[in-house]
Length: 178
Image (cartoon, rainbow, N blue to C red; front, side, top):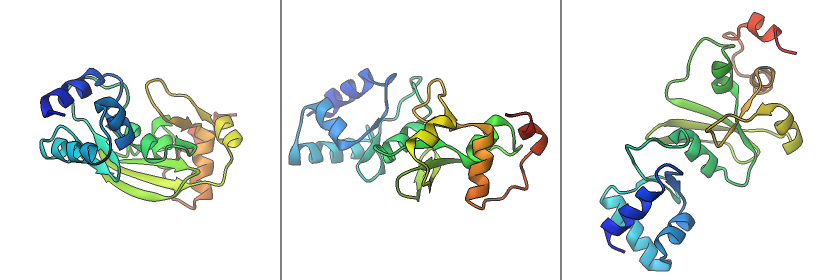
């Protein structure tokens, strides 16, 4: 497929998604096999796509996107696993710690642990043994986010379970929670 036509097809989805696995690109561009791999290489060389991780690509855009880029990428990196924003990232969003992680997102997952540098910051995956029921009960949906968010109390519990620093927690803020 010609680069211009591929760019047009990606641009049509800018407000919906910008992170793609090769299977998504296959469906979007209607190509398979070596032809698809060749097209993806050409699109990366032309900077129409940016390779973020193995089999994960980002379509850069200036349009407003539905999700925060780092969260969209995190959700695709652990597709098939239960994931939520937790630990320091969740604690910061709830205001129970004063520091704001600028270039890091901590995601708790039932999948593999790992750290992934991306153009939007580093994603740190922390494994949990919690089942889907426990996760659903202790997390909340966030508008315009592909990931759930740990409740205040569950963020603090997660920090304690993982033996992370508890020095920054504002315990008075946390005590207001049931």
